Image (cartoon, rainbow, N blue to C red; front, side, top):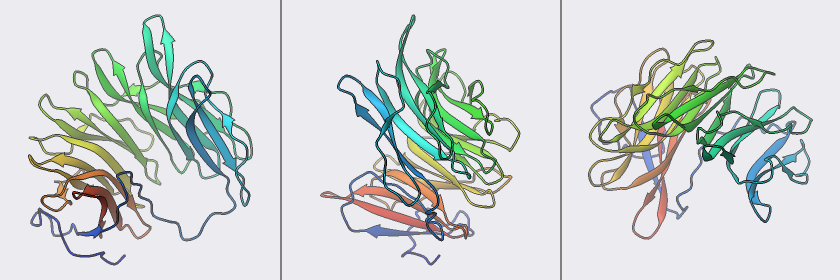
Length: 328
């Protein structure tokens, strides 16, 4: 992948093997960004599914519509039960076309009103099954994310209130099985927010989130090797200022890059850190040019292991897109 433009990394002396090239896009795109690397050809033989939250006149319900391969979207189905609000839906496919949707829903227990995480499975060519609870009832679980590996094992992460603080939580579902008991990934005592997940082709799973160190919010990460368990999390972002909005992605060899935003005392700037397969995250590179406020970063790899990070920058009158290309 050819570089997109001038080199604009703020911390150029740390590692000559890291090569980020940054480009501004001058159009007003707003602040909601996505990042994906297209496949070599469109897979027309597979179904497509859209999920969203929609009011039934009283409550927001999770809805789904299926587009058969080569066809058009069918009438929408309702996935979440009636009687309370649902939100934050996500969906993922395995390599054979089975799909799992996850979302959060308000539940009422004897202890109060809490959010819970639910899932529904659609086998390829079939229909969605009954919604099933993944999180522990009463955990106040929210913002689920899902990823599925090459052997059709699924993992979901979310933030859930355990004891005295919100913690990163995860549940694992073996192929054709049921979700297992959720476990906590982050430490107790300080709130955890915004967990994100990625799985590589070998089945290694990495999760990142932000958690306070008592003074500032910092990015933490943990990696579960295929068939193993999650170790204690490591801190990825530097101390001294708040970090937020982490994202993470793997390349085909199992190397990973995490991105996030971090305050520098004047501006919120996008940073990135590289993790070689079998190693640990290195020092952060600052991608946003000095003086710019970056937000909502996203990261993805292509088949050649080049990575692209994108984010939004507000420049007085419009939100513009900046992008950085990483070449190994």
